[in-house]
Image (tube, rainbow, N blue to C red; front, side, top):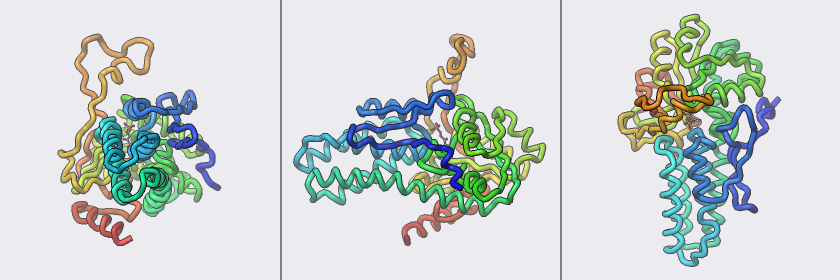
Length: 359
Ligand code: MRU
């Protein structure tokens, strides 16, 4: 039984005929399922910035298709003119969000494809770029499934799991990263009990992860972020699974704000804390978590977002980082599509990339 059949939505899709990027508007879930057809670069940029499409892998896929759409109708006939247009669109899309490295990874991959085809006609380069964007999307499915299989190998039936934010199907193409072991376990009758942090301030856990897991028939319990210590101290959590936006070469991991607090709690209670990381989210050029640019978001997300009236007094100062960095010391293992990296991560992540390079 394919558990994910119940999640019959596409996070990101190209409508090549209509020159549009089609996304499910994640800001309206779970109340409304609305697909947006984005045609201009400004619309695609805004959709990424506003988290209508979000989650590191999905942002990368949206950017790759966005870049293709941005140069598809170029009238340039020589490589230099085409490359100039390509670079402009690439730079623009790259400015939408700073933390998830998948955005830059996907855009760079498109540029590598362009360079490989530099001697071809502009029309052939466009076809190659389209194929590259399709490949990025298709590979994500295999990547997430492999992460799910490695993750599941660490678990036993009936276990209690906890996750933060949404590193689910909505953040990828299929399976998600942190949710992949849950979906694969569900197919094999593991009957996990999953605690879902609501994930303030934008409620990706409550609105998206709870929605996905519920639809897939997984036993999910929603908790407020400040309840994680209680469920852990009750002995209800055997392992924590989270996604990530950028993993540094030493294993320090940027993920949704609140993740590092969950990791500290897990460490305190002796609960394994696993980061599910496609290699596209591991930035070996970034030495430590201190080198990761953390996105700051508008104050209104905290003061005005969820009620008809303000949730805080006018003029209050607000600090609203979208992500935090979990120190490698609080991470039990990093689960990639090429295997499970154990501490010390400086060595094990290199081994993962060597394995990737050797095919
Ligand atoms: O701000 P968001 O909703 O894009 O943040 C998403 C996360 O932090 C996810 O955990 C991360 O991108 C991994 S998604 C597989």
